[in-house]
Length: 99
Image 1 (cartoon, rainbow, N blue to C red):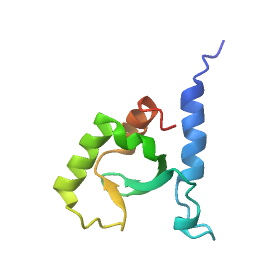
Image 2 (cartoon, one colour; image 1 turned 90 degrees about the vertical axis):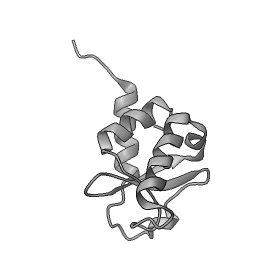
Image 3 (cartoon, one colour; image 1 turned 135 degrees about the vertical axis):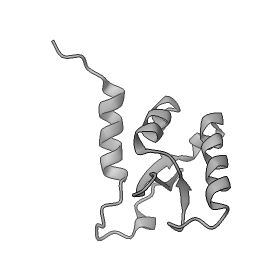
Image 4 (cartoon, one colour; image 1 turned 135 degrees about the horizontal axis):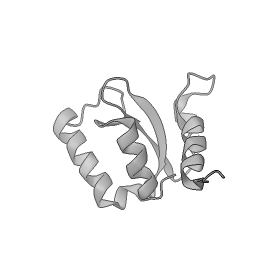
């Protein structure tokens, strides 16, 4: 008997759609209203599209503070860059209801 984890499955599907894969659509055009793109990773940065509602979460605000400490306002990817592993970010984002 398999244990179903709908939140994890749903998060993976959303992540697959939201990661920038170098498609023909410009990155700024594939972000729906009410969402924004961020870059996450310690070495290689991957793009995630998350709802603006995540901005009110204290845990996400802490990640933004860490980002400010590390990068200031000059982010290397041209957008908000979160300096943590993708696994940590996806775990936190699922808890915040972003996925």
